[in-house]
Length: 192
Image 1 (cartoon, helix red, strand yellow):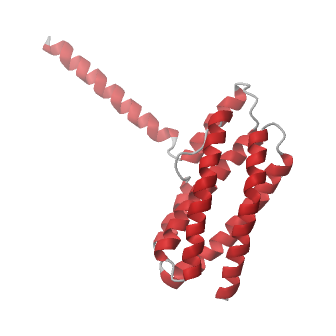
Image 2 (tube, helix red, strand yellow; image 1 turned 135 degrees about the vertical axis):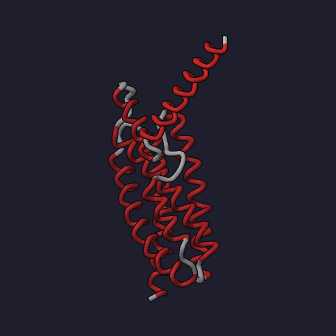
Image 3 (cartoon, helix red, strand yellow; image 1 turned 30 degrees about the vertical axis):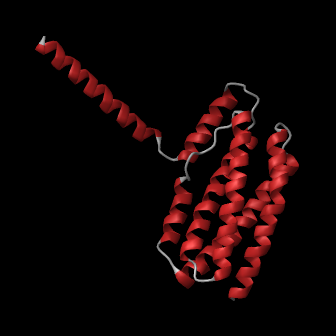
């Protein structure tokens, strides 16, 4: 009886170790995992397109980044304008993120649950800064990021043909992104 228990214990330990090891090799990047899940759905013939899924994953990841960096700005910025811009990012992108989650759930699109590795590096980098150094780096990142976001959202608003809900989301969100761009450009200009 002791021998059987020992063998069972050894077998369970081995299986547990293998399960933990395989999780490490799968990758822990939430963005990559969402992309793989969506790729599998595309391959299964669910009618989803790569462009739609890619846009949704990028929008979700970017939205989470804007919220995290906005929180940092509220805490670490020296400029009142930068702090207020950060608060606007938290408010507006949290709302957009929730809308996108709702759409993704109804459209069977997998979104990342956490920031991707590259975006987390940006958060970590900015978390080390404060005051004027933080302001300069944050404003620069926001200018670049909003240029890219506006281009991606315009493309989705104009080119999305297979998913009306995603197209509507992109179209509806564009004016907010443009408002952010105008605000961050004004802050950037005032800092020079």
